[in-house]
Image: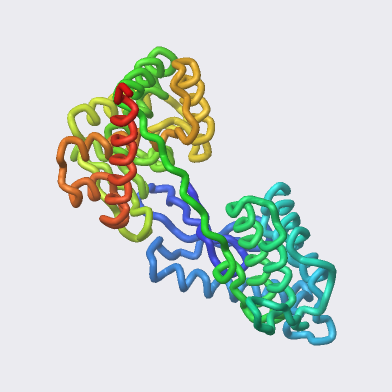
Length: 376
Protein backbone atom coordinates (compact mmCIF):
# COMPACT_ATOMS: atom_id res chain seq x y z
CA UNK A 1 0.00 0.00 0.00
CA UNK A 2 1.37 3.40 -0.99
CA UNK A 3 -0.02 6.90 -1.10
CA UNK A 4 1.28 10.32 -2.06
CA UNK A 5 1.46 13.45 0.11
CA UNK A 6 0.67 16.91 -1.26
CA UNK A 7 3.59 19.28 -1.04
CA UNK A 8 4.46 22.75 -2.34
CA UNK A 9 7.84 21.42 -3.42
CA UNK A 10 7.99 20.00 -6.98
CA UNK A 11 8.24 16.23 -6.80
CA UNK A 12 6.13 13.62 -5.11
CA UNK A 13 6.49 12.30 -1.57
CA UNK A 14 5.29 8.72 -1.24
CA UNK A 15 4.41 6.93 1.99
CA UNK A 16 5.01 3.23 1.45
CA UNK A 17 4.66 0.24 3.69
CA UNK A 18 7.84 -1.67 4.58
CA UNK A 19 8.25 -5.31 3.62
CA UNK A 20 7.75 -6.26 7.25
CA UNK A 21 4.41 -4.47 7.15
CA UNK A 22 4.76 -2.89 10.58
CA UNK A 23 5.69 0.70 9.68
CA UNK A 24 5.63 3.27 6.87
CA UNK A 25 8.57 5.13 5.32
CA UNK A 26 8.85 8.23 3.14
CA UNK A 27 10.07 7.80 -0.45
CA UNK A 28 11.05 10.58 -2.86
CA UNK A 29 11.86 10.57 -6.61
CA UNK A 30 15.46 10.19 -7.68
CA UNK A 31 16.81 10.40 -11.25
CA UNK A 32 13.52 10.32 -13.08
CA UNK A 33 10.79 7.99 -11.93
CA UNK A 34 12.86 5.85 -9.59
CA UNK A 35 11.99 6.38 -5.91
CA UNK A 36 14.35 5.89 -3.00
CA UNK A 37 13.67 5.65 0.71
CA UNK A 38 14.58 8.54 2.98
CA UNK A 39 14.80 6.16 5.93
CA UNK A 40 12.39 8.38 7.85
CA UNK A 41 9.37 6.81 9.54
CA UNK A 42 5.92 8.25 8.79
CA UNK A 43 5.18 11.04 11.31
CA UNK A 44 4.21 14.70 11.24
CA UNK A 45 7.64 16.11 12.27
CA UNK A 46 9.37 14.07 9.57
CA UNK A 47 7.24 15.60 6.79
CA UNK A 48 9.14 18.92 7.09
CA UNK A 49 12.47 17.12 6.95
CA UNK A 50 11.44 15.19 3.84
CA UNK A 51 10.28 18.42 2.15
CA UNK A 52 13.67 20.01 2.83
CA UNK A 53 15.39 16.99 1.27
CA UNK A 54 13.06 17.16 -1.73
CA UNK A 55 13.62 20.90 -2.15
CA UNK A 56 17.39 20.46 -2.03
CA UNK A 57 17.18 17.64 -4.58
CA UNK A 58 15.00 19.75 -6.88
CA UNK A 59 17.45 22.65 -6.80
CA UNK A 60 20.29 20.28 -7.68
CA UNK A 61 18.17 19.00 -10.56
CA UNK A 62 17.59 22.54 -11.84
CA UNK A 63 21.30 23.31 -11.72
CA UNK A 64 22.34 20.07 -13.42
CA UNK A 65 19.76 20.51 -16.20
CA UNK A 66 20.57 24.20 -16.79
CA UNK A 67 17.06 25.24 -15.76
CA UNK A 68 18.04 27.33 -12.74
CA UNK A 69 16.51 30.41 -14.32
CA UNK A 70 16.17 32.24 -11.03
CA UNK A 71 19.97 32.07 -10.59
CA UNK A 72 20.92 32.85 -14.22
CA UNK A 73 19.44 36.21 -15.20
CA UNK A 74 20.44 35.87 -18.84
CA UNK A 75 18.30 32.74 -19.26
CA UNK A 76 15.44 33.97 -17.11
CA UNK A 77 12.02 33.44 -18.68
CA UNK A 78 9.71 36.34 -17.84
CA UNK A 79 6.63 35.93 -20.07
CA UNK A 80 3.69 33.89 -18.89
CA UNK A 81 3.23 31.66 -21.95
CA UNK A 82 6.85 30.46 -21.98
CA UNK A 83 6.74 29.91 -18.23
CA UNK A 84 3.71 27.67 -18.63
CA UNK A 85 5.66 25.68 -21.21
CA UNK A 86 8.30 24.97 -18.55
CA UNK A 87 5.58 24.23 -16.00
CA UNK A 88 4.02 21.71 -18.37
CA UNK A 89 7.41 20.03 -18.82
CA UNK A 90 7.73 19.94 -15.04
CA UNK A 91 4.39 18.08 -14.82
CA UNK A 92 5.58 15.60 -17.44
CA UNK A 93 8.81 15.03 -15.48
CA UNK A 94 6.75 14.32 -12.36
CA UNK A 95 5.01 11.51 -14.22
CA UNK A 96 1.51 13.00 -14.27
CA UNK A 97 -0.93 11.41 -16.70
CA UNK A 98 -1.76 13.02 -20.04
CA UNK A 99 -5.35 13.67 -18.94
CA UNK A 100 -4.18 15.49 -15.79
CA UNK A 101 -1.70 17.63 -17.75
CA UNK A 102 -4.49 18.42 -20.22
CA UNK A 103 -6.65 19.68 -17.33
CA UNK A 104 -3.90 22.06 -16.20
CA UNK A 105 -3.46 23.28 -19.76
CA UNK A 106 -7.21 23.77 -20.21
CA UNK A 107 -7.38 25.82 -17.01
CA UNK A 108 -4.45 27.99 -18.10
CA UNK A 109 -5.96 28.64 -21.55
CA UNK A 110 -9.35 29.50 -20.08
CA UNK A 111 -7.99 32.04 -17.60
CA UNK A 112 -4.84 33.62 -19.06
CA UNK A 113 -5.53 36.13 -21.82
CA UNK A 114 -2.66 36.55 -24.29
CA UNK A 115 0.95 36.94 -23.23
CA UNK A 116 2.69 39.43 -20.98
CA UNK A 117 5.73 39.85 -18.72
CA UNK A 118 5.17 38.32 -15.33
CA UNK A 119 6.08 41.47 -13.42
CA UNK A 120 3.64 43.66 -15.35
CA UNK A 121 0.83 45.19 -13.26
CA UNK A 122 -2.63 46.09 -14.52
CA UNK A 123 -5.20 48.51 -13.19
CA UNK A 124 -8.76 47.21 -13.04
CA UNK A 125 -11.94 48.90 -11.85
CA UNK A 126 -13.36 47.07 -8.84
CA UNK A 127 -16.29 48.28 -6.69
CA UNK A 128 -15.69 51.94 -7.56
CA UNK A 129 -11.98 51.88 -6.71
CA UNK A 130 -8.84 51.31 -8.73
CA UNK A 131 -6.67 48.46 -7.51
CA UNK A 132 -3.15 47.52 -8.55
CA UNK A 133 -3.10 43.79 -9.23
CA UNK A 134 -0.82 41.43 -11.07
CA UNK A 135 -2.11 40.82 -14.59
CA UNK A 136 -2.39 37.12 -13.84
CA UNK A 137 -4.81 37.93 -11.03
CA UNK A 138 -6.72 40.39 -13.21
CA UNK A 139 -7.22 37.60 -15.76
CA UNK A 140 -8.51 35.37 -12.96
CA UNK A 141 -11.08 37.98 -11.91
CA UNK A 142 -12.20 38.43 -15.53
CA UNK A 143 -12.56 34.67 -15.96
CA UNK A 144 -14.74 34.42 -12.84
CA UNK A 145 -16.97 37.34 -13.84
CA UNK A 146 -17.50 36.20 -17.43
CA UNK A 147 -17.58 32.42 -17.01
CA UNK A 148 -20.88 30.54 -17.27
CA UNK A 149 -19.41 27.43 -15.67
CA UNK A 150 -20.52 26.06 -12.31
CA UNK A 151 -18.83 27.38 -9.18
CA UNK A 152 -17.27 23.97 -8.59
CA UNK A 153 -15.71 23.92 -12.09
CA UNK A 154 -14.50 27.52 -11.77
CA UNK A 155 -12.80 26.66 -8.47
CA UNK A 156 -11.13 23.67 -10.10
CA UNK A 157 -9.62 25.89 -12.84
CA UNK A 158 -8.44 28.48 -10.30
CA UNK A 159 -6.90 25.72 -8.17
CA UNK A 160 -4.93 24.47 -11.19
CA UNK A 161 -3.75 28.01 -11.91
CA UNK A 162 -2.63 28.37 -8.28
CA UNK A 163 -0.36 25.34 -8.69
CA UNK A 164 1.21 27.09 -11.69
CA UNK A 165 1.67 30.30 -9.67
CA UNK A 166 3.35 28.35 -6.85
CA UNK A 167 5.74 26.91 -9.45
CA UNK A 168 6.54 30.43 -10.68
CA UNK A 169 7.15 31.55 -7.11
CA UNK A 170 9.64 28.74 -6.55
CA UNK A 171 11.52 29.86 -9.65
CA UNK A 172 11.53 33.43 -8.36
CA UNK A 173 9.43 34.80 -11.24
CA UNK A 174 6.55 36.17 -9.16
CA UNK A 175 5.50 36.70 -5.60
CA UNK A 176 3.28 33.97 -4.27
CA UNK A 177 -0.16 35.45 -4.95
CA UNK A 178 -2.82 33.11 -3.57
CA UNK A 179 -5.56 33.71 -6.14
CA UNK A 180 -7.40 30.54 -5.13
CA UNK A 181 -7.79 31.58 -1.51
CA UNK A 182 -8.78 35.12 -2.47
CA UNK A 183 -11.20 34.38 -5.29
CA UNK A 184 -12.62 30.86 -4.88
CA UNK A 185 -16.41 30.77 -5.03
CA UNK A 186 -18.80 29.42 -2.45
CA UNK A 187 -20.18 25.98 -3.20
CA UNK A 188 -23.48 24.68 -1.90
CA UNK A 189 -22.90 21.24 -0.49
CA UNK A 190 -25.03 18.53 -2.03
CA UNK A 191 -27.74 17.39 0.32
CA UNK A 192 -27.35 13.67 0.90
CA UNK A 193 -30.62 11.75 0.56
CA UNK A 194 -30.61 8.96 3.15
CA UNK A 195 -32.08 5.55 2.48
CA UNK A 196 -35.13 4.48 4.39
CA UNK A 197 -34.71 1.29 6.47
CA UNK A 198 -36.99 -0.50 3.97
CA UNK A 199 -34.89 0.62 0.99
CA UNK A 200 -31.65 -0.41 2.72
CA UNK A 201 -33.13 -3.85 3.45
CA UNK A 202 -34.12 -4.26 -0.22
CA UNK A 203 -30.65 -3.25 -1.45
CA UNK A 204 -28.88 -5.56 0.99
CA UNK A 205 -31.10 -8.50 0.04
CA UNK A 206 -30.58 -7.87 -3.71
CA UNK A 207 -26.81 -7.48 -3.28
CA UNK A 208 -26.66 -10.78 -1.39
CA UNK A 209 -28.27 -12.52 -4.39
CA UNK A 210 -25.86 -10.93 -6.87
CA UNK A 211 -22.40 -10.79 -5.24
CA UNK A 212 -21.32 -11.81 -1.73
CA UNK A 213 -18.42 -9.33 -1.60
CA UNK A 214 -20.72 -6.47 -2.59
CA UNK A 215 -23.24 -7.59 0.04
CA UNK A 216 -20.60 -7.78 2.78
CA UNK A 217 -19.19 -4.38 1.77
CA UNK A 218 -22.60 -2.74 2.03
CA UNK A 219 -23.06 -4.33 5.44
CA UNK A 220 -19.73 -2.85 6.58
CA UNK A 221 -20.68 0.76 6.09
CA UNK A 222 -24.32 0.13 7.03
CA UNK A 223 -23.19 -1.22 10.42
CA UNK A 224 -20.37 1.26 11.08
CA UNK A 225 -21.13 4.45 9.12
CA UNK A 226 -17.53 4.32 7.87
CA UNK A 227 -16.89 5.63 4.37
CA UNK A 228 -16.44 3.29 1.42
CA UNK A 229 -13.03 4.87 0.69
CA UNK A 230 -11.91 3.91 4.21
CA UNK A 231 -12.96 0.29 3.84
CA UNK A 232 -11.18 0.06 0.49
CA UNK A 233 -7.95 1.00 2.32
CA UNK A 234 -8.48 -1.39 5.22
CA UNK A 235 -6.18 -4.37 5.94
CA UNK A 236 -6.35 -7.14 8.47
CA UNK A 237 -3.91 -6.43 11.35
CA UNK A 238 -1.76 -3.78 9.65
CA UNK A 239 -1.71 -0.36 8.06
CA UNK A 240 -3.31 3.00 8.78
CA UNK A 241 -6.74 1.40 8.36
CA UNK A 242 -6.48 -1.80 10.37
CA UNK A 243 -8.94 -4.50 11.47
CA UNK A 244 -7.87 -6.57 14.48
CA UNK A 245 -10.14 -9.61 14.73
CA UNK A 246 -8.56 -10.85 17.94
CA UNK A 247 -9.20 -7.68 19.96
CA UNK A 248 -12.35 -6.84 17.96
CA UNK A 249 -11.07 -3.33 17.27
CA UNK A 250 -11.02 -1.33 14.03
CA UNK A 251 -8.49 1.50 13.78
CA UNK A 252 -8.93 4.14 11.08
CA UNK A 253 -6.81 7.22 10.47
CA UNK A 254 -8.51 10.49 11.44
CA UNK A 255 -9.84 12.20 8.30
CA UNK A 256 -8.99 15.70 9.59
CA UNK A 257 -5.88 15.13 11.75
CA UNK A 258 -3.84 12.63 9.75
CA UNK A 259 -1.56 11.84 12.68
CA UNK A 260 -4.38 10.65 14.91
CA UNK A 261 -6.31 7.39 14.83
CA UNK A 262 -9.95 6.65 15.57
CA UNK A 263 -11.23 3.46 17.13
CA UNK A 264 -14.39 1.60 16.06
CA UNK A 265 -15.40 -1.28 18.36
CA UNK A 266 -16.99 -4.32 16.70
CA UNK A 267 -20.58 -5.27 17.40
CA UNK A 268 -21.50 -8.96 17.20
CA UNK A 269 -23.09 -8.48 13.76
CA UNK A 270 -20.07 -6.55 12.48
CA UNK A 271 -17.71 -9.23 13.80
CA UNK A 272 -19.74 -11.84 11.91
CA UNK A 273 -19.42 -9.88 8.64
CA UNK A 274 -15.68 -9.30 9.07
CA UNK A 275 -15.11 -12.95 10.00
CA UNK A 276 -16.63 -14.00 6.68
CA UNK A 277 -14.44 -11.50 4.82
CA UNK A 278 -11.37 -12.82 6.68
CA UNK A 279 -12.31 -16.37 5.71
CA UNK A 280 -12.58 -15.32 2.05
CA UNK A 281 -9.30 -13.38 2.30
CA UNK A 282 -7.41 -16.42 3.60
CA UNK A 283 -8.50 -18.40 0.52
CA UNK A 284 -7.42 -15.95 -2.17
CA UNK A 285 -4.06 -15.07 -3.70
CA UNK A 286 -4.56 -11.43 -4.72
CA UNK A 287 -5.39 -8.91 -1.98
CA UNK A 288 -5.03 -11.70 0.57
CA UNK A 289 -4.58 -9.26 3.49
CA UNK A 290 -7.19 -6.68 2.46
CA UNK A 291 -10.63 -6.55 4.02
CA UNK A 292 -12.25 -5.87 0.62
CA UNK A 293 -10.44 -7.51 -2.34
CA UNK A 294 -10.41 -4.42 -4.56
CA UNK A 295 -8.01 -1.54 -5.16
CA UNK A 296 -8.49 1.87 -3.54
CA UNK A 297 -9.66 3.18 -6.92
CA UNK A 298 -12.68 0.83 -7.08
CA UNK A 299 -15.12 3.18 -5.37
CA UNK A 300 -16.77 4.34 -8.61
CA UNK A 301 -17.16 0.76 -9.80
CA UNK A 302 -18.86 -0.31 -6.58
CA UNK A 303 -21.13 2.73 -6.64
CA UNK A 304 -22.22 1.78 -10.15
CA UNK A 305 -23.14 -1.70 -8.95
CA UNK A 306 -25.30 -0.24 -6.18
CA UNK A 307 -26.87 2.28 -8.57
CA UNK A 308 -27.81 -0.60 -10.85
CA UNK A 309 -29.52 -2.39 -7.96
CA UNK A 310 -31.41 0.81 -7.07
CA UNK A 311 -32.68 1.12 -10.65
CA UNK A 312 -33.76 -2.52 -10.66
CA UNK A 313 -35.68 -1.95 -7.42
CA UNK A 314 -37.16 1.33 -8.69
CA UNK A 315 -35.82 3.38 -5.78
CA UNK A 316 -33.13 5.40 -7.59
CA UNK A 317 -33.21 9.08 -6.56
CA UNK A 318 -31.14 12.11 -7.46
CA UNK A 319 -28.65 12.92 -4.72
CA UNK A 320 -28.46 9.30 -3.63
CA UNK A 321 -25.07 7.70 -3.07
CA UNK A 322 -23.49 5.13 -0.78
CA UNK A 323 -23.15 7.98 1.71
CA UNK A 324 -26.88 7.45 2.16
CA UNK A 325 -26.08 4.37 4.30
CA UNK A 326 -23.94 6.54 6.57
CA UNK A 327 -26.75 9.08 6.85
CA UNK A 328 -29.24 6.26 7.56
CA UNK A 329 -27.13 5.13 10.53
CA UNK A 330 -27.11 8.70 11.87
CA UNK A 331 -30.89 8.91 11.36
CA UNK A 332 -31.51 5.71 13.32
CA UNK A 333 -29.25 6.92 16.13
CA UNK A 334 -31.13 10.24 16.30
CA UNK A 335 -34.48 8.46 16.40
CA UNK A 336 -33.34 6.16 19.21
CA UNK A 337 -32.54 9.22 21.33
CA UNK A 338 -28.76 8.69 21.43
CA UNK A 339 -27.01 11.85 22.83
CA UNK A 340 -25.42 14.17 20.25
CA UNK A 341 -21.89 13.80 21.60
CA UNK A 342 -22.15 10.00 21.39
CA UNK A 343 -23.45 10.19 17.80
CA UNK A 344 -20.53 12.51 16.97
CA UNK A 345 -18.06 9.87 18.18
CA UNK A 346 -19.84 7.03 16.38
CA UNK A 347 -19.98 8.96 13.09
CA UNK A 348 -16.44 10.28 13.70
CA UNK A 349 -17.49 13.83 12.81
CA UNK A 350 -14.85 16.55 13.15
CA UNK A 351 -17.10 18.63 15.43
CA UNK A 352 -20.46 18.57 17.16
CA UNK A 353 -21.59 21.27 14.69
CA UNK A 354 -21.31 18.73 11.86
CA UNK A 355 -23.47 16.31 13.83
CA UNK A 356 -26.07 19.00 14.52
CA UNK A 357 -26.12 19.90 10.81
CA UNK A 358 -26.84 16.25 9.97
CA UNK A 359 -29.63 16.22 12.56
CA UNK A 360 -31.23 19.31 11.01
CA UNK A 361 -31.22 17.69 7.57
CA UNK A 362 -32.77 14.51 8.97
CA UNK A 363 -35.40 16.50 10.89
CA UNK A 364 -36.20 18.56 7.78
CA UNK A 365 -36.77 15.38 5.77
CA UNK A 366 -38.91 13.91 8.56
CA UNK A 367 -41.14 17.02 8.63
CA UNK A 368 -41.49 16.96 4.84
CA UNK A 369 -42.47 13.29 4.84
CA UNK A 370 -45.02 13.91 7.61
CA UNK A 371 -46.64 16.80 5.72
CA UNK A 372 -46.88 14.68 2.56
CA UNK A 373 -48.99 12.16 4.49
CA UNK A 374 -51.68 14.74 5.30
CA UNK A 375 -54.90 13.95 3.44
CA UNK A 376 -55.84 17.41 2.16
